[in-house]
Image (cartoon, rainbow, N blue to C red; front, side):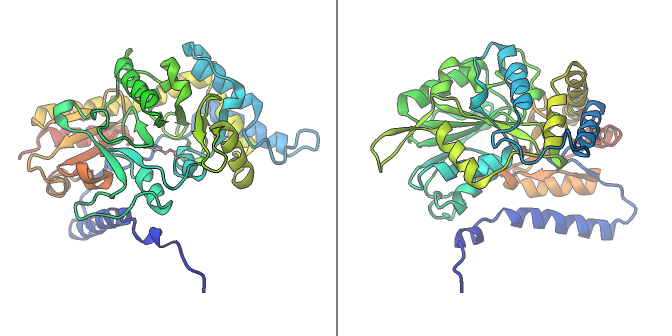
Length: 410
Ligand SMILES: *Cc1c(COP(=O)(O)O)cnc(C)c1O
């Protein structure tokens, strides 16, 4: 019989999801008439925008003709999309970027979870806490996390704890990790860094030879002019940082799956085997050749359309819709006297439980307001005492939720 990778049995995130679903079922049984509002989701709700639909329809027609049919495309993605990305997301912000530094993918999650393929198992990983759990769990199944301790921390992971006293921005590590995952604007706290704060992380990484894995999935939601959209706004980041971008949240691509990973040519790792420094861009190219294909032609044409004048306008409308939801929720939380962060540069609001217990707060929001939130435990040990509200919801429902929330008593 084949032996399994038992690490998969050690990831517990399913447990929180199952607990939420169980409570939803019980609630629905007991309150068959109640209309509850889901503000727990990290998935988008608006339909695809016209420029995306047009591009997809046109490319489906191309696929139907001998002369324009496309089979398997380039491993790194089609040049038309990569050029649009380089011009639209980097050169437009004065950032130097070459086409062969971009790898188009089927969304950030898969690359964030797979980047470990090109890194040795002995690396120590640093993560923000609270955080999107894929960063941790992909390293648990990749044998990098050590053992799970009683306090729910993995022994070989360096947790960079975000506390409310420091506005949820962690201090630089006192214990050096080899690799750090950063995610700004942040899911779940909704906060982001200023350019000078991010520059401190980059300097730390250069001085300590740490690889930075920067998840910029939510950059399109930034409204603060001082907040960096890309880690490469800090020039020296080209030496130490890989950046992950996604069309999932900004353009509603969670059902289409498209994003990209940037690996500048300067970023290096070390080979124990040869004693040499190796360029990670080359190594990732090898990994992609073995394991991956870029998304379909149709999806890549859809992504390209986001960079047209019309596409840019529609992305902005999309983002504005969700950020209007976020500001309604913030106003309601203010009215109720609840403490929170986020909702300004990210579609998430991180709300402090008046009882310091996430589950108690979750229960009260559910029973008193019929609002479904995400208990903080979903995002790691430091999530206890908070819930995350998501602005990814229908606006009428958010209006209703806000009026209930404004009356919330604790
Ligand atoms: C939603 C989310 C992703 C997932 O992105 P996909 O491109 O849909 O895979 C990545 N990172 C964070 C922090 C997210 O919240």
